[in-house]
Image (cartoon, rainbow, N blue to C red):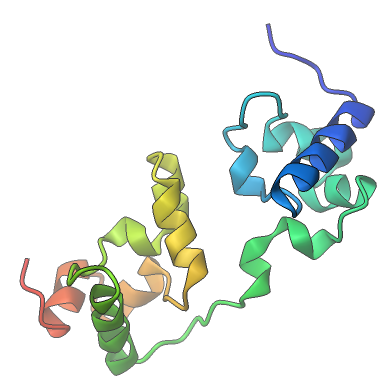
Length: 149
């Protein structure tokens, strides 16, 4: 049976997270939820939105969304994309990114939250933006950067 979370319990869970981690939780960190915390969708349904839940617990709305801290560029030239692949490889033991490295939603769905975090920690193009410049081919992007796979 699913647990029903009250507004007060959700606010307390958010504050407990903040006290433990030194910051408000990120939506993706509660989807799926750690033990003892509500699911992100529960916060959204009870409060109407994730940001409203954060505000109710006394957290600034932007603290809930790490992705808003760094606006993602939507336009990258082919040369910038090639340079980004090479930069990624240089910081990852010579390994170029795989598609899900630059698609954090895909990485999270596959249970690879570390890959999603690595994406948000840097200035990387989203995979869909990257392949658009290479006619939809991730392989062509990597080849242009000097990685034949």
